[in-house]
Length: 632
Ligand code: COA
Ligand code: AMP
Image (spheres, rainbow, N blue to C red):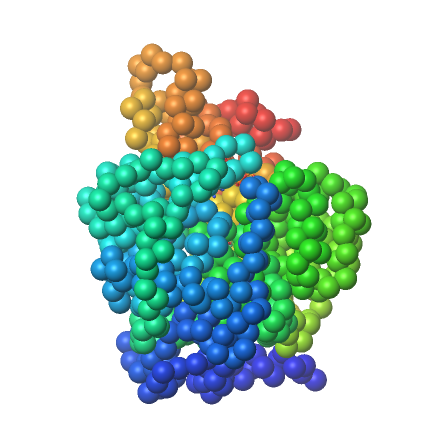
């Protein structure tokens, strides 16, 4: 007997056109599509070609037209500044239309790029929606990135304008954005036309010049503008994510398919209805923030919480429960690391007991695998279902999930459940054949991806093909490795590339290595991810120094840590490196990062037969013990 989920899932694969056309009825279109899927130029698939729409209209205007004008669209809750603000749909429409007028006034038009480098304040969502309103393509850059990373994104996306704020606020310090933006604009050869600066009272920016505009000043005189129809296949945004080198990949998302998939997911995956309060405790700089702080809840007519704080320390490990109770949140989405932080501070969940959680229904976790301990702790204390779901910047929504709005399937700890409708997930062996159930392999998705899947990489069609489509022709390679059990449950176990996951943030060890290699005393280096109880993984560097270097090892390690912080940002959490005489390699020169990680974590590993000098692994073990890893 098959259940409701099976029926929906099978139909999504059997009749994708019918399935997604039906979902697309929930979106307001200026013009309907000529066909549902254009598959004439694989792997460049396009959903809803010929259709015209506007994402901002569907996220904001339509709800005001439908009578939701007085409903809260955004509740900004900022324990870090001690402030709160509720913005109704009518107010959001007014602010967004006026900021769209500001951008238009600065010469930003359809297809132009705008970089948004902002903290977690409502103006960030306003800026994103305003871009969508006029058909400009936004690229939000996470506030924890250093000037160099911002500069890379400026150079690649060539924005007409940057929207920023005077500062971001971390528990222990204020991050001044002005100098970061200034330095990034100096590093990048691209000439950014204008900067709009939101001055925050916690620290005002002194950045000035003819092309630096104060948010409040320009908003005061701004004329509201209407939504501009764009093609469903036009880009809505570029979101840069870590690739295998230091150059980030600019994932390009469309307007039409993205809206269809996200609106559909709110009911079918999250089980949420319009008018309910939904909270994704992430950051708008990440894909989770794009999809589930801004677009999906607003497309669905929900109230979204924009939270500027941390799971612990703002002021305590009870802040999540306070926000849920105070704003009647029914569904929350965050990263397991946030729950590990709470569990560490309040293992007995005593703070939770102080709050009325009666309206709360489901906790969703993603960003990294939910370890069974964290899953059980959250279930035991919240007494609600806890759902691990798996997705990527490239897809914009879940590849694997327990779609509780369709049918809640039994939870298997350690698994994000089954492939979501639209995704034909296969576990492939290196030769492209399907792996037997239970055997590890590369997790791939048979093309085409469902709506919202990346269109390409910005300015890099060939890199799109090389990164995702070349190893397994006809499939999208997720970069994750894992297995599927006999019930079709997916287990995502590791990456197949050199991406590591630090506190739910995706980082490239290759990118960190590029920084370390730039140190004048470093001859060779390697970076691996080591297991960390709080953050899941942490990067750890190995440095081989140039012969004859007279400087102290400790000083060089200190330099290395500083360099990564300066060039990538604090978010890399790169705190340790060890100096070694040589790195373990195969005879063909490939560094054995997997073996090094296994030694550090104390897990089993088998040195490959092709290892150049087996003894070097013992030396690595000794070096790791000096920094507290590889304990015997
Ligand atoms: N702007 C500037 N700096 C930032 C930043 C931002 N938006 N976000 C983080 N940083 C800095 C932090 O201040 C910290 O700097 P430090 O080295 O000077 O202390 C560094 O980056 C690492 O930050 P973080 O990863 O937040 O670690 P933490 O130890 O401060 O906090 C957690 C640990 C678990 C509480 C935190 O990582 C967390 O809340 N994680 C949730 C992750 C998440 O939402 N992921 C999104 C995917 S769903
Ligand atoms: P990002 O693109 O930053 O969202 O990171 C995507 C990557 O995070 C995936 O490819 C996985 O490696 C990892 N990831 C996200 N969610 C999960 C999950 N639920 N289980 C296991 N890994 C996950």
